[in-house]
Amino acid sequence: MRFRRRPQAKAAAIAVAAVTALSTVAVAIATTDTATAGAARAGAASAGAATAGLDPTTSTLRELAQHTGLRIGTAVDTAALQADSTYRTLVAQQFSSVTPENVMKWEAVEPERGKSDFSAADQLVDFARANRQTVRGHTLVWHNQLPAWLTSGTWTKAELREILRQHIFTEAGHFRGRIWAWDVVNEAFNDDGTLRDTLWLRVLGPSYLADAFRWAHQADPKAVLFYNDYNIEGINPKSDAVFDLVRSLRSAGVPVQGVGLQGHLGTQYDAPGDVLQNLRRFARLGVETAITEADVRSVLPVDSAELQAQTNGYSLMMESCLLTPRCVSYTVWGFTDKYQWVPGVFPGQGAAALYDENFVPRPAYDALRRDLALAR
Ligand code: XIL
Image (cartoon, rainbow, N blue to C red; front, side):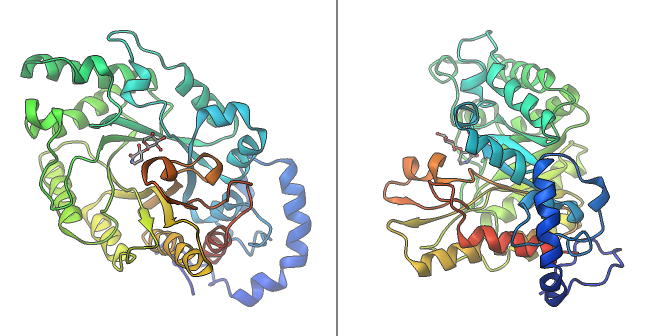
C-alpha cells in the first residue's frame, strides 16, 4: 500500500518493514517532540515519515502529515477550547489546521444588524497563529445559521444583494490575510443536482454564486476560495452539478479555486467507491480539493463491524486525498465524541469521531496515522 503524494517525488516508497524497524528509535524522538508540540518541523519536511524517524504508532497526525504537505485539520468548538485543557492540547498537537465549527457563521458574527462581533472567531485565529496552524474560514454564504433579523425580513433584490455584499466584505475583510481558505458558498445544491431553494436563490437568482466569489476575492485576495458541500464525495448528480458550476465559473473568470468535500459518512450506507476519481476530475479542472468535514457515524450502540467500517470510511477519504496532488487538506468535523455534532442532529446516531468521549482514540485514528506514514 503506497500513496504517491507528489508526482515529482523521487523518494523511495516507504516499506512497512522499514517503518517497523525504526520504531524503537522513533519512540525516543516522538517523546522529545511532545515537548515542542505545535512547533513547525521544517527539518522533517519532504523527508518522509520513516526517514524522519517517526513511528506511526506513537507520533501525532500532525507530525506524520508534515512530509506529505497535506494539512490535517479539525473543526473546533471554541467553548470546549476555552474550558477543556485536554481538548485544547490535542487540537494543538494533532492538527495543523483548524476550522471554526460555528463562530464564523453569520448568526454568530452579526446577531444584530450592523453590529459585528468577531471576538470568538478572533480568539480561535489567535490560537491557530500561536500554534502555527492555518485557518479554514467557514462559511460566508449558507442557508443555515443565519441571523433572525435576516431571515424574518422581507427584502427586495437590490437590498438583499447589498446585504450579502456587505456581509462578505465585512467578514472576509475583518480576517483579511489571516485565513488560508474560505468556504465561500456552502451547500448550494440538492442531491439531484438542482440548485437548492434558499433565500439567496429565491431573491437573487443563481448569479449570487459568482457574486459571492468575486466579493470574497476582493475582500481577501490571498485566501483560497472554496465551494463546499456534502454528498459530493463520489461521482453522482450532485458532484456533477458542482463540477459544472465550478467549470463555468472559472471559464467566466470568477475566482473559485477549490472544492471542499464535506465527507459526512455513515456506516449504515455504502461508502462512495469513486472518491479518488472524483477528486482527480476536480484536479484536472485546475482546482484544489479538500476533505473539509470528515466524520463517520453509526446507529448506536456501535459494534466492532461498524468500527471497522468507520475506519475504512476515514481511510478511504484520506487515501484518496493523499493520492490526489491537489488535495490540500483533510479536516475532521470534531475529533472527539465529547463535543460532536452528530447526536444532536441525527438522533440515535453517534460514535462518529476519531476519539471517543473520553479522548480514547478509535481504530480510525491509527489507520489515518498509518496512511500518512505510508504517503510519499
Ligand atoms: C454544524 C455544527 O457542527 C453544529 O454545532 C451546528 O449546530 C450546526 O452546524 N455542514 C456544515 C457545518 O457545513 O457547518 C455543519 O456544522 C455540519 C454540516
